[in-house]
Image 1 (cartoon, rainbow, N blue to C red):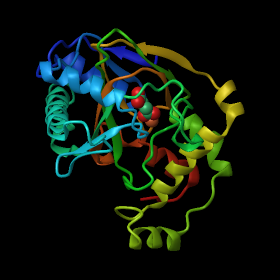
Image 2 (image 1 turned 135 degrees about the vertical axis):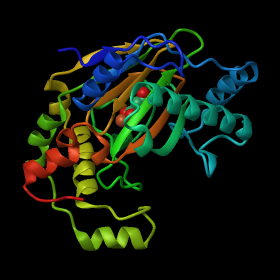
Image 3 (image 1 turned 30 degrees about the vertical axis):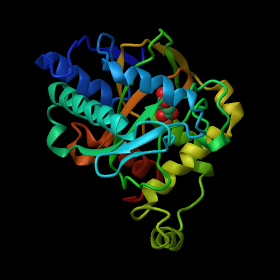
Image 4 (image 1 turned 90 degrees about the horizontal axis):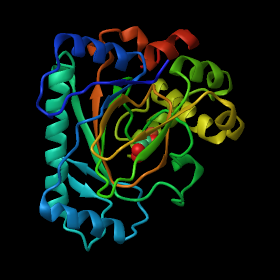
Length: 291
Ligand code: SIN
Ligand code: FE
């Protein structure tokens, strides 16, 4: 089965047909990636220069992150932060309208997470194994617990000279959990309290967050698993957008440069099929409540 489904919307504020909305919802919750093959994000004149400037400054950060309330972080001093923030704000607004037209049932429940600008070439980027996104993983944030909420991410390849962003897509979440839960460490409530007290985490790391981090790390650390497990490669061309629940879809980014990403958090109860959430799957496999 293909892990991608095509949704041929051409405008950020287009509404999907009822059939497209139903297909998108089901595919997404089952762990497929929604590909919008003809939906690019046009840059304004002055933003093109920004793109080159940021990439050239060779900052060690893999991403420049943006939050509505805090602006951009991780950028080089030489780059124009207000221009970058305006770009990210515009992208966030576009992704919100796209989700409204395609997944209207989610919209009242979506909470805006961070956005990111990803100007650094992935291939050959020096990083620790834990931050190495060329290894298959499911997303989990060490300092920002989701406490069960879904991580819904919208990506757009904005490379100006045709370079694709190449991903691998791995096994379904159910299988990942079955493989790695038996060797996962138990959560420690005292440690979770301490991390919160020290502001290492922004809120309480629940047992759910603990197990998601265990899966993230165990997958990345296991090179035999990385080599042997079923996987598909897919190249996202510039001018393409894709939407994914990156907490459940195992993925790796192998190469590519210049992408935008906006994260939205979704409470599990807002899903059409909450039993397909990683929270429900982990709770079934471990036979205990986790959030
Ligand atoms: C990731 O979430 O693992 C990275 C995706 C990307 O930057 O394309
Ligand atoms: Fe990831």
